[in-house]
Length: 604
Image (cartoon, rainbow, N blue to C red; front, side, top):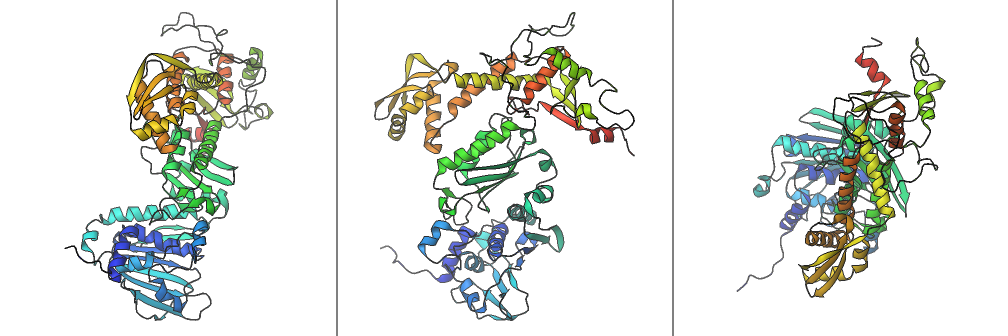
């Protein structure tokens, strides 16, 4: 006979709930800090001992809790942030479940002290996880709240065994505070561990102050130096913040901070949109770095899908995905060198590669030889020659002061070529320093973008297979394919359904001739099932185009004339995603005048 159904004791219920909310000291800190922010605090102090296992104290200067509400604060599902079902549709606070404090109290020794802003007296209450906490007692405390959590998991040894070393737990705690501090730059955060101050972050006003202060302190000085600012608005949504240029990619995803309406989240849809935007400019296996804030009406996002509120669900997921992708894709395409669209008089190139007709091969070149591969020059050679001549010593800089005069005022972003180094690099003088360009990487990116434009203008053409390929799939996959036949056709894939779980591939994109048709179909079905769309064909085609661009770009030990080098610089300025080649390598770097002065100890 099975056991009878029984009501669980309140403390056991709270401990079960704690398993959903409390994983480690950092998760306790997250809940307490979010409560402080919801209370309107602009100063939050976090003190920890032994990584937060022995002690975690969070003190704020928020509005505080009234005496009559202290006992309610330690009961399950008691909250001041929602009152009825309709409130769940537009939650604007970080916390709302009313589970955090009782859950934490059930697995620790918790003490809650608070003074409401309208009260003359502070009160303190201790929790043990039951539904009947003790009575509040008078306490000495300024306006605000302090929650002190001691001996985490002291009464649940099995859970305590899963905690890591003090150093590891402190690392998680630091990362948590860092993430919250990046979301609320108007709040002062102070973190100490075992009595030692780890950081004290003063509040900063506006996003400009954030970039210069919080980013450097919390993400590192390298990120702001490589960050591209972003601020895009569309369809009632706003995406703003900073994305690092692809050259600042990471081996791990440790510098990825994404916030939805001020809430830090880890979302697969967002991650996919970001990865898609970076796919053309990163080395394989590298991860982008970013600090991004997405703002949209609360009614369009459901934050009540995860007990710890790490995940969200968007009402219009496809629209959010496309907005994030397009905003990032556009900003990365602009890069740091965009000088506007190519001149109208520049004729289109059918093959997507530069015209080949004016370069001169180097006579008696002892190095490797290649067939002529001239660069397209939209302006006449005389234009570049005059600009080049204007940079000769004495023409553009004052010999005594070293300051730029009017001759430099009109220099383009990458300047004008001075020389070619080792048959590999172009040295150019810009307004603010020396630009060094890898001519092969630069030409490769230029050619690749032109090939992509030519391919897109010609649409994706299908190539019938000599022998159709039969693919056995699950019935739901066959249904998915059948309902998207027109979309497959636009991607250059022709197929038919032959049975409940059978599909036959009759056509694949012409540029992917020889590809594994079955693998391609299965990958496409997987993409459609997860994301409702697929960029698989574009990725495969881009891979082929990248190979073509690499083989057709100018090689090392190739001597270029000044007008050819300048033509390459101008084309690079007009090319999207020009800062990296197709393999993620930088196409150019710049040494500022100050950096050059430091190298030669000038001014010391």
